[in-house]
Image (cartoon, rainbow over all chains, first blue to last red; front, side, top):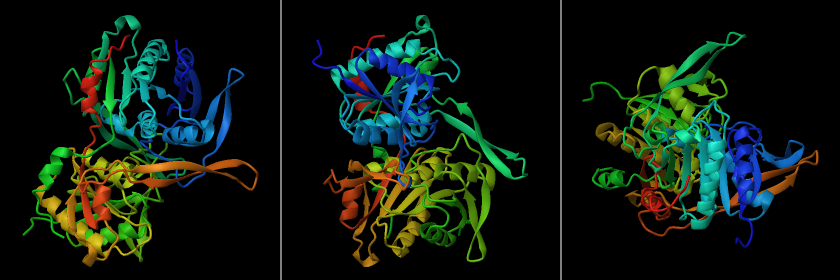
Length: 257
Length: 257
């Protein structure tokens, strides 16, 4: 028997209109009281951006004729900060971000708004999880929400160490085809990028980013590899970016001033 | 005798108009051929954002009546990507970002546009360095540029391992007061944040992020501590965010699906 229902902040980077956040909200209702604070529009690939030079505004957002949550003209990280400090005015027991459509694995992690929201929760001392479904097309969130509930329950029970968040990627497959869960590390895969040069109707040049995914890892314990083998991938992340190996080496460099 | 002059991509997050990028450009001219590709306006605290949903545009920007560089309506990471792949069309020998006004130390590193530009250069396989002067007010870049030249020369000679960049913070002090150089790790210091709630002339509520810096480290080898002791801080960074300690612990959790 729980003393009280856990209070869960729900956010994402696809925007408060997205189907993924609705699925996550419905799942969290089964294990606690969810509070949605999410961007008013899509904010993908915003990295860990926060809004310093513009005012943030908030309005109430309805879904199916009922209050669903607060929409913010900011980034996912803004939503977590503003949600906790100015909207909820209490420290939630958990932050969940997603369910993102598309993987947040390998080097994409550093561009991910979904992950940045969970990072911000972690910085604020709240256990936090980022959830992504590894397909841009599939709108069936049933496997992802089932697992999100399980994992959220487990994290509410265990807690997470200060400074650690979980980055979860769920294959876009029917439950029967999922082989299990794998604890993974962040891969090195990245995009080989190029820019399409186009001309607008006023004959001005513009560029559009495009690219091809490079898979650079083959080991089973890498996030992308686990996904490709039909496993749910859980990667614990932290945000000390120090390269400790290079730190020792740099001490031997003769750098003058 | 060098075979040819090194080609150096110069960018920042304060915008192509900022005094810091001009100072860095002038410094790089003394050791190679600098090419400036920078945001058309300030893009601070953009994290590692890239622009996916808007077209990127480029125009030529003058300073003192001469061509200075290319201005881009994007983030620092966009500038590096677009600079290499669509403007320069060659792989530069070095990417330098800055000179930022204000420190990029401790947890601020994950929000930093200055650092994200150097990260993007590193991802593209180019040795990259982020430079920050630890004051928002002081416009004297002479110490910072003198050191930037030294370090750029050293990095051009040594190279950097794949996946490693250097994050450099220079105290805003006269050269005579700088005690030396320290190789450091990223600190844990962060902001204790709050939002100022205000009302606009049309009586609508908006919020403005504010905060107080928390210094959470005392060890000499931490970036912020080195700066406070009047040392130039060099932190090697990498972008595998995996929490390897937690990875082992998570394997003992019983997570069901």
